[in-house]
Image (cartoon, rainbow, N blue to C red):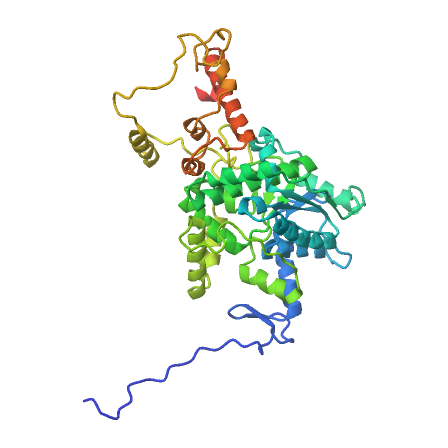
Length: 493
């Protein structure tokens, strides 16, 4: 029977509280100064060694960057890229035990025009970054995002690698570097920044403003930034482009890519190396570091950072898929500390079907990944396309308003005929008429098609994208004309 004075509340055992008074887990002597994970307290010196070893191991075990190779560091001014710059500085210093043997330079993309910042604010942020860049002693380039509108169409084409990546060549490069050859002296300095044009800024804002959703604008901005970075690396002679994307950022990126239909390109978007462009390889050496590790390292050792607003700054969590994914991962990480690492380990197991570094036909016009829209008739993609076509179909009896050229006459000719049917294969009007949205969608992967679908007009697209689309269209028409005279490959029959 129940007693009135009986105590039914058992004494709960309180979990062991982590205290900074614990000894370092590595040296067992100094008091712990930081606790990154439960049960792993580090002192100040051991945490620096741990952070440095982790960064060097990511670059050393892959042997992706050769001694004497020119490497471009993409620095945005945020915590992750600033920590990457600090690690490269330490690795090239005279006091380093195992020096990094590549030749670095810095590039920063000024996105103030896309964010609507004033000219004075943009100059202030760039000046703060240039102070950090000059202190590093490396050459640096500060390029406004408006320059992406003047890129050549070759930036979205796959170029053959210009550096031999065989294991024997790596050993030979090490021997040459140890002998002192192939090492150019570092002379820190900045390249003069191109002058800003207000008309280009307006064109860039119109391009981003044509996207109806913040999700499409963020993806479009990321694509333009990547194109400008790759073009800068190509023109300056750099074969590797180091990005400062952390483990936390890549975990959010993985969920975002799945939500946006980029499941076929997850290995390239989140992997350690991405060689979709051929001659320029994107490398993510900070992908093993969490946002907490980077924040503690920057605070403990005084790494300078410059906080620059983004498109989703001060936006609600449901404003875009990127913002929602970030909020979801951050909240889940608070209750389950292994969330980011679990997502990250999943991304490590992903591989691109058929390899990702070969120059294959059918690359996407925007992201330069393989086009993944070749699905069967019973697929969900074909069902969506049929539904979209039925919704956009004009009612029966609709009369087209506008002059129609006579049969056989070119629609763009002013003083005669071009000898081919209007709009047909080889018609000269194809050189002057901008491609329509439906024509561009055939050259895009599924995810980039969603971006284009959210755009109100394709008239604001950069000229290099339009020119490349027109070139591929003419090439396809030419291939159809001479298809009867082409010899079939042995494996195709």
